Image (cartoon, rainbow, N blue to C red):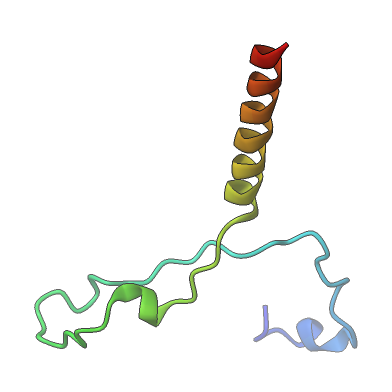
Amino acid sequence: MPFESEFWKKPVAGKAPEEILGFITTLPVNWTKNENNDSEFHMTILAKIMPSIQSENHEKILIASAAKTQTMENS
């Protein structure tokens, strides 16, 4: 732990992660539930939304499957 002297004796942190695609995070929308501090912004403006690799792969699979089905029907 950072409050222990041994923590600060290691000159270099461990190896950087290489296969991490992202982090699971949540926006704490209810932490001020009883306060009137609505910014009137849509939540997607407050957080960067990126398409996931999984959904991109899913689309490719659906397209390939449809093409294969069409080829089989035309044979």
